[in-house]
Length: 217
Image 1 (cartoon, rainbow, N blue to C red):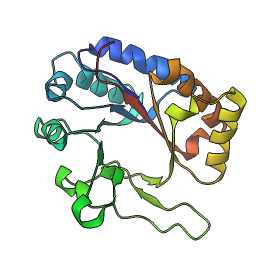
Image 2: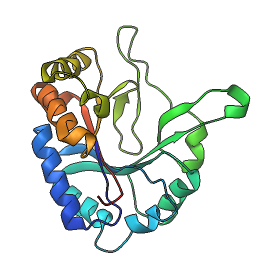
Image 3: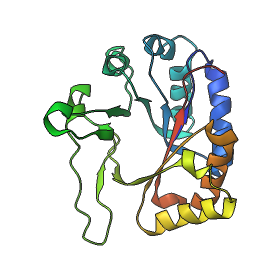
Image 4: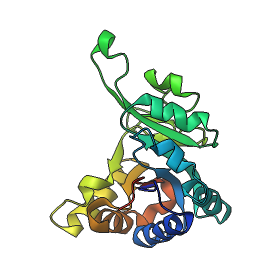
C-alpha cells in the first residue's frame, strides 16, 4: 500500500505520482492505493472534485495499476463519514481513533473497516493462523486477509543505511508480515525506494498499501 497527497491536485498529476511510486517500488501495480490524511472539513469536497483524485482512482483500476482504493484519516470522524456519504465505492477505509476510551482506556489504531464507519469502535475479526504464524484480519471490503502486524514505510526511510532497511523488510516477509505501508512523499522518496528493494524478490506474497497525501505542495 502507498498513500498520496491529493487535495487540489488534478487526476493527471496524481497518476504521474502513482507511476513514480510504481517505479520506486519496482512493481507494475499496487494492491491498495489510498488518499492519505482526510483531516480538514474541506478535504472530502476536494477529494470528490471533478477532474481530481477519484477520477485517477477509476483510471488506475481500469488500467490495472491498482487493485483496490481507499482513504485514511487521523482526526475528526465526521470527515470520515462525509467521505462515505458522498458515495464513492471505496474498497477500504482506515481509521485512527480512540475506541471506547472512557470504558477501556485503550486506543484502537489503524482499524480496517469492512461494514460501516459506525463499526470503527469494534476491532475486526481475526483469522487464527497457528501458534507460529502472525494472525490475519480482513482488509476492508477487498476480500483479502492481511497480517495484523505491518511494516510502516516512514521510519524505514529514516534508517541510516539502505542495506539495513532492505534487510528489515526481507526479515519481515520471512516472519509472515503481509502488509506494508508507504507514501509518495515519505523521506524524499527513500521509503518507497528501499521498500521496493526489500520486497521485490517476494512480491506475490504480500499486500502493498500505498497512500496519497491530500494537500497540494
